Amino acid sequence: MSDRAVLPAVEITSFGYLHAEPPSAHLTLDLRHHFRDPHVSPQLRYMTAHDEPVRRAVAATAGISALVEAAARTVGAFASGPSAGTVLVATGCAGGRHRAPAVAMALADRLGQDGYSVLVRHRDIGAPVVRR
Image (cartoon, rainbow, N blue to C red; front, side, top):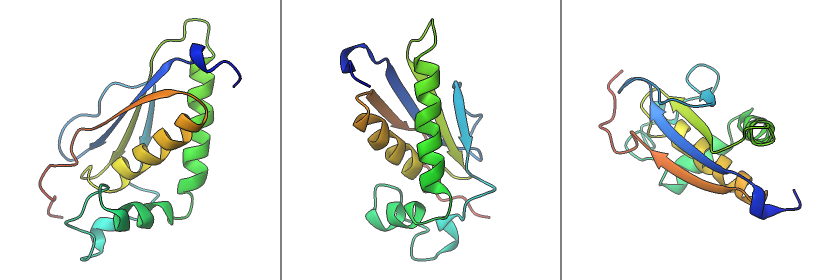
């Protein structure tokens, strides 16, 4: 996009479905069923997306990069609407510590490349590890 000053803001909230209801959003990415959960790895279970090994594991998951790219295009579609304002995006996984925040971070980086002002919140990243 050529005029970066007119791009609306984007707010991304990562969350865990097992902790509370999903936040209100224009676009919600449910990562629970189609993408491997780093939680299953004992080495990653107690880490979060603040840790590089978790972000690397999520980014290496088949389909994640395509999903981030598609989400960025979808945000662009929302932003180009006639009554465009802040675009709300939610990324959810089971516990909110691995997939959802890692994808939120990746999407924020991608949208930043297009000139969007992005605010990221991780609602459940500090929640206790969910026993399953």
